[in-house]
Image (cartoon, rainbow, N blue to C red):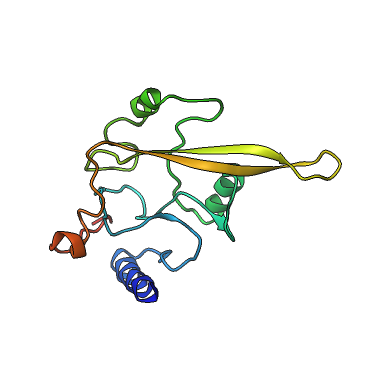
Length: 162
């Protein structure tokens, strides 16, 4: 695992040098889509890192706090399709479109639902907002890792601006 992390960090460092952008690949607990294409290629109009979560220990940060914090660092978040009550898969896919919002060259992988709620703290009726769970839909036919050299036998495919 450590060797894999080091290899990812090195790829990120080289890509950052090539693009003149900051290297965020070394930040622990900042999940996101990075520069090396795994199963989807992108022609990006923004930096090649989309942050989709912020972890504090083993807990996910609620969306509003997540959005506020990544905005300070000028990170790119995924596009928010809906906020509020339930949203059907059909409506989600309609809003997402075939290629999504980040320059996908391939059909989008799917969508993620964040389910959040207020949880009682046990102190004087106080509540705190928490992430209850995430649910991910992956489109039929999506193949994981098809652009990774260790699986494809081809050169790495990079998601960065020329």
